[in-house]
Amino acid sequence: MEADLAHQARVLAEQGAGALFAGLDRRLGWEDGQLLLSTDDFMIQAPWTDMSIAGRGLVLLPSLFARGAQPLIDPTRPPTIIYPARGSATLSAEPPPVTDDALVRLLGRPRARLLLLLADPASTTELAHRLDVTPGAVSQHLAVLYDAGLLSRTRNGRVVRYARTALGNALCR
Image (cartoon, rainbow, N blue to C red; front, side, top):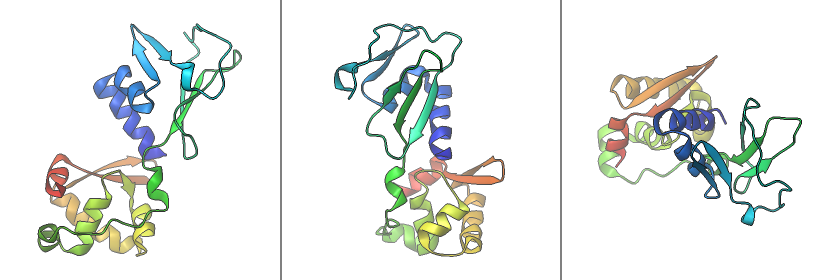
């Protein structure tokens, strides 16, 4: 969830509200400073056609259980859009197999697998859990990949999240 919120914040900062909402669901749009909701496909038809949210804010709530964006509009609360969190499919997925022999020869199998796993940001603990190894083992490999400029890291409280840099992405391609 933290990785998704960090991603959405980065999209908003770098590309603006239009890109943010378009990335959440095809039924969301941003035009002339207004958030547009196409209600044709929503499960429940909203009893409103136009609602000002000025000064009330807008809550974006990632969910592992949402299928497309779902608006929650209550006149007594800030409007909320629940949307599918990025990377939720990786919760039960097996780590990707390392099939690129050149990447394995260059980095070794453990580091190549870590670099491939970091297509979406993750913490040392998350990676250790997915690979069924100790956090210490993961941490040693992450330090080498970070020192080589293949990873960046971001601290959020006590959690450090790693993500591939442009160089790491290029190497994975």
